[in-house]
Length: 71
Image (cartoon, rainbow, N blue to C red; front, top):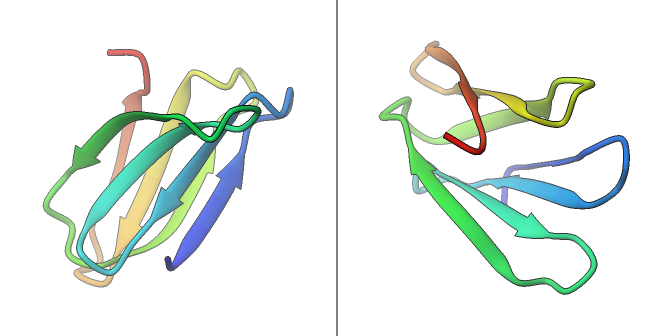
């Protein structure tokens, strides 16, 4: 795991990994949610916007993506 982000309310967690995948987790139960592969190479940073609905990730390729985590 390369990076972790938690929503302000503590309900969801993002993890970023060297395989390029970004995973969403239920922080209370540990249950996995959606997985995203934005083709940015190994992911080195992830973040939630203050609203907890928008996410961003950056990869070693220099690419940055932002998306609606529920969409």
